[in-house]
Image (cartoon, rainbow, N blue to C red; front, top):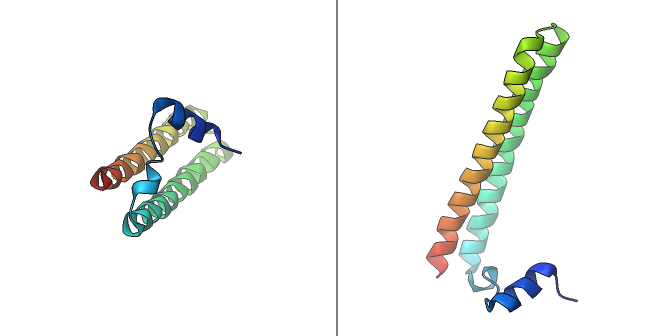
Length: 93
């Protein structure tokens, strides 16, 4: 049974873009995933701790700012990861 992604790629006339990658490029993509997973986890822990401390100390005005900062940082890291992965994919073809 094909996934929705595979069916969509067939309809668009494209093949599997990951299938055309070398083993080295696949390993590079996996390394990028691991690197950014670690960065994201670190940022979530750090800012989550700051949010928890602000709540415990009753600094309610800071909580919203910290949550927005956490969302911005996580979005930035995810976009950076995808950008670096796109660069690896572009080398493939």
